[in-house]
Every structure is written in C-alpha cells, then in structure tokens.
Length: 216
Image 1 (cartoon, rainbow, N blue to C red):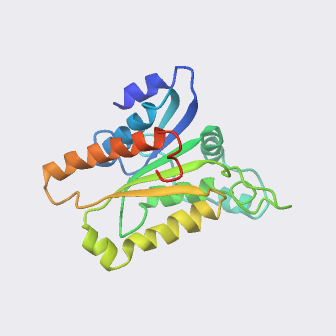
Image 2: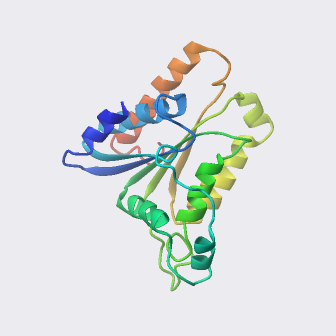
C-alpha cells in the first residue's frame, strides 16, 4: 500500500499530503490505519503523497549541540531538520501515525517535533507574523492498547488533546487539528481491528467530502 501511495505522488496533485510515520513500520497496524485514512482522502481527488517513515529513514530525534546553538541564535539548523521543514512547508495536510506510549507520543515523534518545529519557523516569528504551519491541517492517527474507559475515565484523551493539539499545533498556528484514537488494539479482537480500518477509511472519505474538513 505504501508503494501505491508513492505512485499517486507522481500524478498531478490537487493537494499535498505528508504522512509522518513514527514507531509505525510498514505493515504495522498504526501504519495501515494511516494508509486507509489517506486512501479515503484520495477518493476526493488527486493528491501528491509523501510517506516519511522516520524509523526507516533513521531520523535522529535527539537535540544536538547544533540544534541548541541554532535555538539560541547561533549557527545553522542541521540539514536533516531543515529537510523535514521543507517537507512540512510543501504539505497541505499532515498526517502523523504513531502508537500511544505512556499516554503520549513516542520519543521519535517528540524528537521530530523538538528538532523541526523551531523558533522563528513554527513559533516566535515576530512582528505578529504567522509561522510556517499556519493554514495547514493536521490529523493524528494514534493507536492505544487500553480502552475508552481508561482514556476517558482517567483523562488521558483530554490530556493528549491539551498537550499535542493545543500545546504543539495550536501554539504553532494550526487551527485545524484532530486526533483519531483507535483503542483496545492489544485486546486480540481481530474484528475490532477490521472495524478500525474501516473507520479510518470512512474518516478519510469524510475529510474529502465538500464542507466537512472542519470536522474531520
């Protein structure tokens, strides 16, 4: 499926989609959910899709001395982080696919944000100017081993929205961001997994439907 998505990228595009897959290797349930979501979006028109598997690309999530120096206004942003920024700048829709670790993002996703969403680019631009993420749309496709009772009863779902949707993306000027959680993935319920794939595709179709993007 990922190869098929890359073939779509060679056609004339009405929209640019960037998929960031982290701790979600090809064939994993997290990656397959993202594939089904994007396939639904593609039903609404042609799109250029870039699939970035951060594990396969060996992206280094660690903040280096060069990253910290750049944050303090000294030196240049490391080339690998700048390449990720260029990917983001080219995208209209950004889909992040990952499993939930300890009720939040895996270290690879967190490190990608730490190194790529830099001051003067994602935030702190100055003079009231928006960052480079303004106007983009973001969808988080996340899998959780626990069920809805844990996520809702203990406030984990709300915490994810506060920390990631608001704390990262709203702060960076993205107003259209949604988290789609697929839960109980470690329950051994194969039928539930199949339903999840169907739901992911339906969400993508809803995104592609006219007038529905604010909700999906």
